[in-house]
Amino acid sequence: MSIGMGIRVGPKAVHFTVVKSLPDDQFELLLIDKINIPGAMDEPYKLSYLRTNLLSIIMRFNVTNAGIRITEGTAQTVSTFRIYLEGVIQELFADSPVEKYSLSKKTTIARYLGKTIDNITDYFEGRNDFVGIPDIPKSHLEKRESILTALAALEL
Figure 1 (cartoon, rainbow, N blue to C red):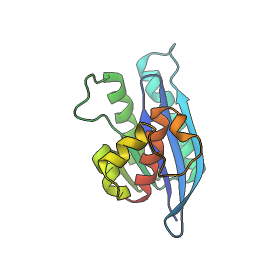
Figure 2: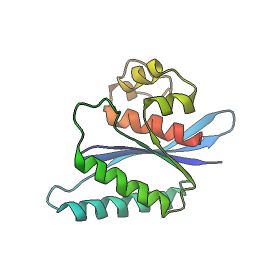
Figure 3: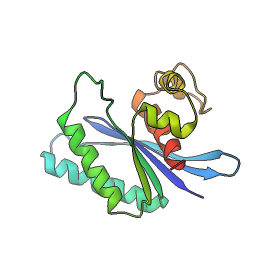
Figure 4: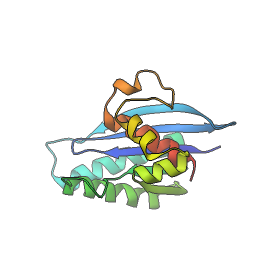
């Protein structure tokens, strides 16, 4: 049985989902939440704050597989700070009990979940809910992305 974590980094918050694999390709949703990045801190302290909090979550849930939803290559603007946050998370995965992790774009998530890119895009944009979690289509894009990234991480 694997525990997966999916992460979607934003400039002010990091959304994450923790799921547990069950028999017959089912899953149990353990946690959907976000970590707000304190605006009053200098960048190095923000990075440390995020690392410390994510490590605590990884340890609490015994996360074995993880994924980070990274920026698509076609993105109009790329936040340098988002790249820093993603780098710190990668370093955390390498230095934690996480056994497998991925850097996930839409194509990667689609491949792991056995879906088309159109299915993944429709889910991200709230047009369908093939995962079956109530009220998710009305939630934040970042939350939906963290859910699919967590489910894809279970397939690593």
